[in-house]
Length: 248
Image (cartoon, rainbow, N blue to C red; front, side):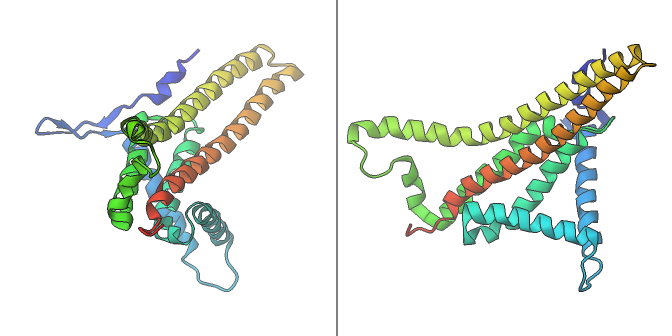
């Protein structure tokens, strides 16, 4: 059986080294670039025709806008409009990265820990910057709310600070772990299905493992969509605390 971990190996496609710094073009960066181009292409095609009756592609894109807009509004309120462009870009980037791993010979960049944690760190840093801009000094009161006994303040600050710092780690690892485990499961079961189908090639039972494999891929597709949804929801929740004004 083929090692399922092979599909997660980052390979240098165009080796590049500048002043000792490795900036090689990898299979991961190539698929990220292709996904960005595909997303931009879809939006350009969807907005090319400005008619009264929307095209099918325009209808799908509009529904996607309303879907992500609903997530942002329900978790951040009216001020969430400011972060909506970033959230929809993040949702599409993660969703395409998850789904593309279901195709043969494709590389799922969301199965790389450095990518998922990197996206989580961007949300984390943005929440700090936005929080300080909106709340000024009161932003740091979150680590020590009023009413805490004096002897518990140091312990409380340490606990809150650790909880705050673990946010990007947990957010990135959650997506990474779900994608890796899901893709490994699909590849292992697909290998077993191919073996069983080859044994029972000329019988009715040969269709059973194939049908099971198709069902699992459909289930995995739903999971890919769900993971992008969860990542955006948690990102909005973290940013919502920073979007609150200084008076709240």
